[in-house]
Image (spheres, rainbow, N blue to C red):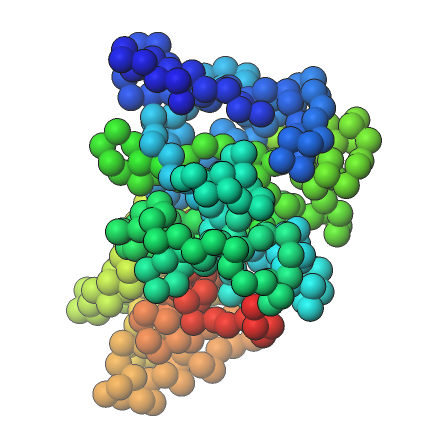
Length: 427
């Protein structure tokens, strides 16, 4: 950056301009240009309106990420082609998350078919370089793949089979060398951000297969997901075809490319978090709800969806139960009810017969009186009630139902699954 003593600076890249934002200390403006490049700038076109569409996409994406409590530098959109962000000292890594084998991953792993699914997300770091140089080292290629091993960074060519390579350079000094926890945190944020966007695209019947992001530290030293996330940052499939920058790389007509950029800007404008609710319904105030709240807090549900406690007995107050259920579901049509009851479970049956939202029964007395669970299991016809004995599992099941339409809840659930999954193809 061309920063002066005044703190005013301006830096222009191939596709964007970053400069100080007047009147707002520690903020910058990111302006998206109409330029479209590929092959490290070897292919270059100017596509009128591309900058506006790219900025719209970036703002749509970062607004969703921010609403999902991810630490983003993005603050607000300030124009058709620009947005305001926290000023960041950028970390010299491009971080890539992959759900499928596309792009450079397919080149490094030709033994794995293109499009191969990774049940466990792949996380990759690339050293961000320019001019094929890094700290006086000449490189055979820019943006090499980084493998962290034994306190060193091993650099590989990103465009050749990995099993046929040895590292062309081993660095003892590299970004965040003395802060492995920060590198780990970068990876966790990148993974969770991918999961948020993965579900957002699934809701729109498209498929996110990989994503490239960058990070920086703001002026307080806090880690931020920074730069831009636009249609150049990912691969997205619609009916098996790319609707992202890959079309341009593959030589598609520029009018087709622009149409897909317009489509993506429009679709990402639909990214949102739904209004949802978990209703914790108990028949008596002697039934303690603490196990449910503990599980909900573990999955950071407060803030993601509403949690409504209710105490009403279906045996003793049937009319009030139906009235209250109607009121709550009318306010939040996207709800799940957890019916926490003991002895004879009339509550789960009444609720399931009366409302059209999922009802999950949890018995509070089954350990002391195992026979009580049968009143939850043996329901009349057309009275669908799920029965789960463990309160935490019941909460997770309710969240899984809501996660089908909620990117934030999906990411909270899936990030834990990712830790224990494995990929069938060893790479």
